[in-house]
Every structure is written in C-alpha cells, then in structure tokens.
Image 1 (spheres, one colour):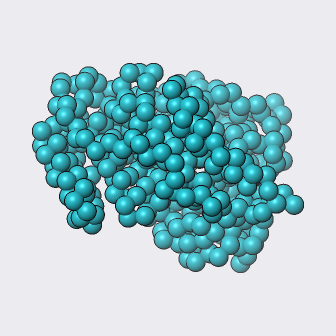
Image 2 (cartoon, helix red, strand yellow):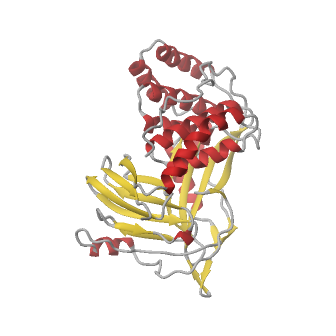
Image 3 (cartoon, rainbow, N blue to C red):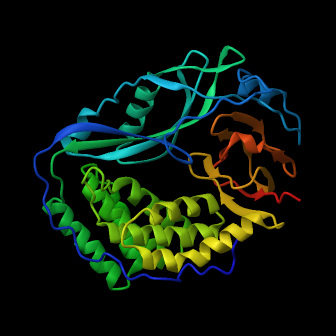
Length: 395
C-alpha cells in the first residue's frame, strides 16, 4: 500500500453541513436500470479462447478439496442482451415513499439465462434486493459462443435504482430528525450522533434525497471516528444515490461530487484499493471546472501507478462483511491469500470475459491470463474472518 498517503491531505473545502430544506411532492413509481461493467460503462467484450469448462459445480469442488489444495472450478466468455424484465417496485415501499438501489453482478449461461446473481451492495428496503434478484434472473441474452458452441459469460453488473418519479425532497419530520443528529455531531458528541444516525438510517420511509444526505453525514461521522472502511462505503453509496447530471436529478451539485471523488481516492489509495482509486480519478477527470482538485490528486495517482508497476507485493488487509462476502478489483494478474484468521470457502474471479472459482488455500499464487482484462475477486467465507489479499509482483 502507499503508506505515505495521508487521508487528511488535500482540499476539504466542500463539506456540506447545511440541512436539507425541500419537502417531498407527489411522485409516481419507476425503476431505473444503470447497466455497468466492473471496469466502467457497458461495452462489447471479445470472446476469448477457454481451456477449462464452466459447468462444474462449486459444491463438487468444495466436497473434493483437500487441506491446502486448490481446486479449479470454472471458466468462460461474452453475450448480447435480448430481453430485460423490470423489477417489481414493492407495494409497501411505494406506500411509504421508500427509495433506494441494488447493485448486482451475474453470469450468463449457455442458454442466455442469468445465473449466480449476487448482490454486491444495496441501500433502501431489503425488499429491493429480492425484487432486483427476481427480475435479473428473468433476463435473457443471446449466449456467448466458444468454438461454435454456446458457453457462459461474465462479468456482468447492473445497478437498479428504485425511484418514485417526480420532484423529491425531505419531509418536515426528516429535517427535524436530521437537524438533531447534525447538531449533536457539530457539538462534538460523536458517539451520540452516531447512534442517532443509525436509528435514522433504519427509517422505512426514506427517499433518495434523504438517503443521500444521511450518507453524507455518515461519511463525516466515520471520518471523525477514523473508520476509513465505513467512510469509503458511505461515500460510495452516496455516489450511487446522488443521481446524475445526465438525467438532471442530482441531489448534491457537481463540486460536492468532485470532493467526494477526491476524498474516496485518498482513502482507497491508503487502503490499497488501487483500482477503485483509479476509477474515481477517471470520473473526476471527466468533470468540468475541477482542474484544481485534479491537480491536487495527481501526485497520489502517480504514487499508485508506481506502486502497481513496482516489484513490491501489494497487501490489502481484509475483514469479511457480515454477509460473508468481500469484493475487490485487481490491478495485477497474480494474487494470493495470507494470514487467514477464520474460515474462507471460495474465491471467484470474474473478469471481462472469463470466470473461475477456486477453493481457498493459503500461500498459493493464482495467475490470471492478462488477456482476460480487468478482474474482480469475490471471496466467500465466515463473517468477521480476517486475511490479507496479496497482489503479487510480476517478478
């Protein structure tokens, strides 16, 4: 990791402390689909030659795996969309005005059907997850082809935004509650503010506008508690909730979005999440009138690029989430696990056009063909398990 990077560095000149003031108006339900690949916006993926079949069962490999033995489970290539079914907007969420989003990744099988759909993250009602998963499983594709035969494909990802159409804003009840949390935080009562914030986050009536304000405040509280993982999660969710300039539905203006991206770059660089930092930097570069922030962050990006190109191993300390999953985008083609404290079951590598699953063995080095493009690893295991993911130097 780039240990020299300070997460307190650079410009913090945009910090939103004013309260949301708009009130909610009449809306109609809608669900917006934002289709994304792990490496950016959707694009065509060229089929690649495969050497391992993709239809071996994960359970079989797990059953046959021996201690410290690595089992290669699957691999594959690309496809084109044919039919998409909109997710159902849960009736209870509509009635309460609840809004949010779900980010999924999935695989397309030999028949063009979706399988192995996984929720990478979500915000809002848990019912959104069920609805999104149900819908994406009904999607249909023209399957990818290998050697003239249909084959499976990965990595596909989608964000489904559950939005009730029309102008949005904060209710009077929310404004009052938010003001109490914010004032408690500004008075220096960090723990009390955090507890009050968590209670507010559990409201089942929050709309997208309110979600975004709460995530902004949560990021500030996490920063005050020196909890960088939580701060990054809050900022990432804020960006997912904020809307876009393209659709003219942004909650926060572009300068604050630029600040969030800049802050995220610093935190991700410090944590060793270099692909995420570079992705945020690309987004920042595309924004107008952000030359100062881009110039400020450029030295950090240079350090990241030097670290990736170096002969030093890149070490990412990890604590598994409560749901027993962890996702990470790789910047190198070789990786390994070390210092495992707890139980890890499988690691799945999802690339632009290939997928493989393995059982986890400590001190084993996996090597991914560079032709597969950028890859994401999904690790499954017991919650709270700790380990180091090592991106191994080429030498």
